[in-house]
Image 1: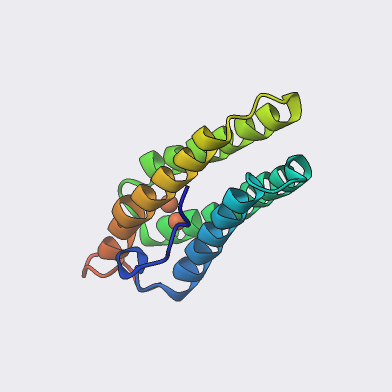
Image 2 (image 1 turned 60 degrees about the vertical axis):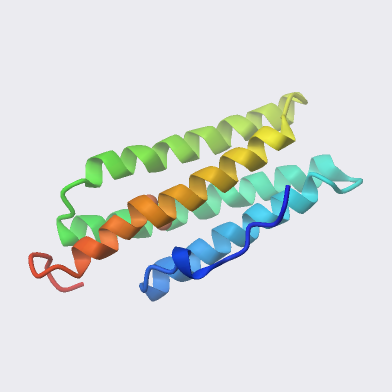
Length: 136
Ligand SMILES: [Fe+2]
Ligand SMILES: [Fe+2]
C-alpha cells in the first residue's frame, strides 16, 4: 500500500482542521509502515490506538465548529464520524483477537479519510464561508 501523500485537494483552508487532518494522515502512514514491520503486532496496536484517540479529538473539535456554525448537515456528519470511530475500534478488536486483515484496514483508512476530508469536511468550510454562517 503506497503512502498517502498530502496534496492541495485536502487543504480546506482552516488552520486547525488542516493540521489535524495532516496528523491523521501521518498516523495512517505510520500504520501502513507498522503492517510491514517485524515486530508488527505491538506497533499496529500502538498505531490503531493512536488513530482512534486522535480521530476522537479531531471529531470533537470539528463537531464543535459545526455546532457553532449551525451547519445544517451536522447530524449526518456526526454519524459518519461515529462510523469511523466504531470501525477503527473494531479493527483494534481484530488485532487483539489475531484476526486483523491489514490490507482491509489500510484500504478503509485511506479511502475513508480521503473521501471524508475532500467531500464532507470541505462542505463545512464552504458553508462557513457563506454569508449565512455566523463568524467563527
Ligand atoms: Fe468530518
Ligand atoms: Fe475532519
